[in-house]
Length: 164
Image 1 (spheres, rainbow, N blue to C red):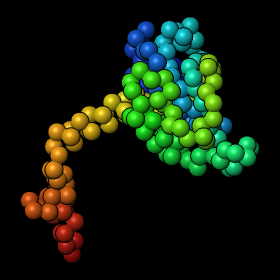
Image 2: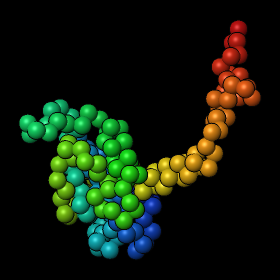
Image 3: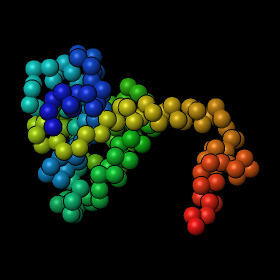
Image 4: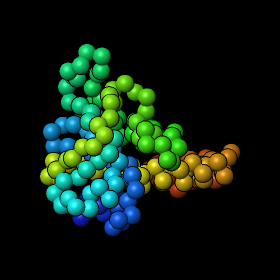
C-alpha cells in the first residue's frame, strides 16, 4: 500500500486529520488499530505513525496465558467499531472496548505502508452507523421495507418467485 491510497481510504485531508480512528491488518497476521494524526505523519512518506495503537494477534493462540487471541479480522473490526460507537467522539480510548484481549496501548507506533495489507476506515464506518441509528430512532415502530410482509416488498416477491 502507498501513502496516497492510505490517506484517501481513511479520509485524511491534507493537514486536517486530527486523531482519525484506523484499523488495519498487517501482513504478519496481526491486527492493528490506533489513531492517525496528520501533524505527526506529514514528514513521513513510507511510514505511518499511529497514536495509542494496539497490536492484536489474530492467528493461533496468544503467547500470554491470560489473553486469548481474537480469531479473525472481522471479530477485531466488530469490537473496534462497537467501541467507537459506545464511546464519546472525543474519547481516545473509545476505539477499544474493555475486552482484555486488546492488551495495553502503544503511545506511538510506526508501521511501514508496505506491511499494511487491509485498511479499515473506522471513522467513516462509525459515522455511517450513527446515521443509521439516528434514522432508526426517527422511524421507531416502522418495519424495514425489505421485510414488510403486508406491503409485499420487492425482496419477498423475488424470494417467492418460482424459477421454473
